[in-house]
Amino acid sequence: MRVASDCHVLVINHRRKPYYDHIPAERLCASYASRYMSIPRSGTWVGKDDDVISLERFLLVDDIMVLQLPKQLGMRRYIKTLYPFLSYNGNVRSWVFRYGDATRADIDSLRSIGASFTCKGRHGHVPTPLRYSTVDFLSLVGWYASEGYLLSNGNARTYGIIICQNNLDNQSNIVALCDCLGLHYRIDSGRKVTIVSELLYRAFGHFCPGVARTKTIVPELRQYSVRHLRSLLDALLAGDGSVSWTGARVYYTASEKLAYDVSDIAIKAGNAVKIAPQNGRGYEVGLRHATRSNTTGARRVSFEGHMWSPIVAGATNFLAVENGCFFFVGGAGSFKLK
Image 1 (cartoon, rainbow, N blue to C red):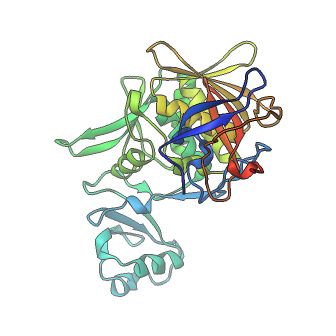
Image 2: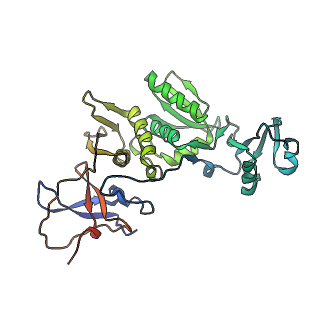
Image 3: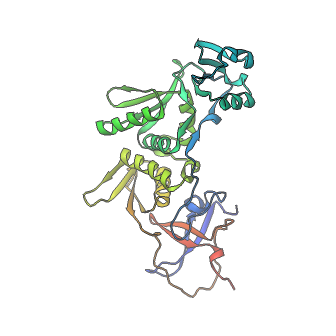
C-alpha cells in the first residue's frame, strides 16, 4: 500500500477555490486496509458478513478448558482412552484439560462429534464461551467502548471487563445481552456490570485498547458488514450518545481516535457525519441519516501545477475530512492526467 504517513489531497469545494489540504493518512478511511475494499462513491459499504466471531486466538497454553460432550454420545466411557489429556470433571459429560496439552487435530476431532468448549483461564474463572454471535458481540464492544474499562487485580488473580451504567433501562439491556452471549456477570455498587473472564480481558484489550482519551476500536471490527456495524453503532450511541427532539444524534467522547473510529463506523452504516472538538472537553460526533454518500458539490475547474494524491491498490475514491466534515475525493486514478 503506497500511502505516506501524511498525504496532501487536492480538495475541490463549491464554496472556494481548489487548495491543498494536509490530511493525515489514517483519516482517509479507504486507506485503512486495501485488503478489504474502499468505500465506493455510492456510499454503500460491503464488509465481512461472518455470523460468528471466535476468541480462540486469545487462548494461552496454560488456560484451563472445559469440554462438554453431547447427551446422546455413546462413547462417553471411552473418551479418556481416545483423548488421554482429558481429566474427569464431576460427571460423564464434562471434562477439563490444559489447552497446551491438546493439538489442533484433537480439538477439531472433538468438535466433529459435537463437543463444545469454554475457557476458565489460567486461574479457574467461571467458564467463558469461545464463540459468539457477531451482532451480539459487537453490541457488547459498543457498550464497552462507551462505558467500560478493563478489570485487573493481579493480587486476587481477577481479570475481566466492567461496564458502568446508571440508567436502569440501559443496565437491563446490558444484562440481557450478557445472558444472550452466555456470560456470567454481577452488578457492583448498583451501576457496574462486572464480567470476570480472563479471556474477555485479553480480547477487549485487543479489540478496544486504551482508556478515556486514548480509547479506540481496532480496524478489524470496523470491517464488518452494514448490519453488523449498525449493531455496534446503536450500542455506542446508547452508551455515550443522545437524541434530540428533532431526531439528531450526537456521540460524545474524550478520545480523538474514538471520535474518528465512530465516524468511520457511522459512514459505513449509511450516515453523514461531522466531528466538532469541544474546547478541551472532548469531541462531539454529529450523525444524520444519509440516503446517498455525503459528497460536496463539486465542479470542474482548471488547475496547473503538482497534485499530490494517495495511491491504494483497487481504490480511486477516498473519504477525506475537512473541518470535521467527511466527503469523497478522487485519487490519482480518478483523473485523466496529461
